[in-house]
Image (cartoon, rainbow, N blue to C red; front, top):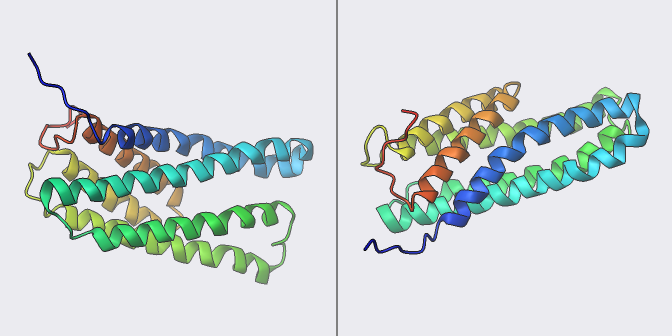
Length: 205
């Protein structure tokens, strides 16, 4: 009889899937709020509430998932090469969210119509985004050093992390980077939900 043990990474797996799924409605609602600002101001608040909820949930889920990734690497592989980088990513994600939410509100209030104010809105987001992109690239490169099969989930995740990071560094390809990052979350979900058996070959490879 098969001995089934509790999967301590199951919650992280499901939240990784949730984070991946939330990226699309986040993009759609972000565009919809800009359209509503000019075409249907009455709908603006109705759109903003779910937009902010999704943004906050996405950040919280992402932080939990990456913390569990660090725990997995520490416990299962004795791998600590990205511990500090993960902490930096978490700090950056929190700062980005805390900054982006009020900036979104002020932007919809036409607060950034003048060039100096527009720069105030864009530059900090660009700096944080580029920094997170660089961190993502380094994380991917260091994960490639793991002594696991080239087709394992970690190898796939590492390359996706590098690709997403490159997009974030260019800043203008940030949305594409978000989609690639979502794909990375799906890979982590598959790893976590298989109870951390990272040597299983992903079915899509």
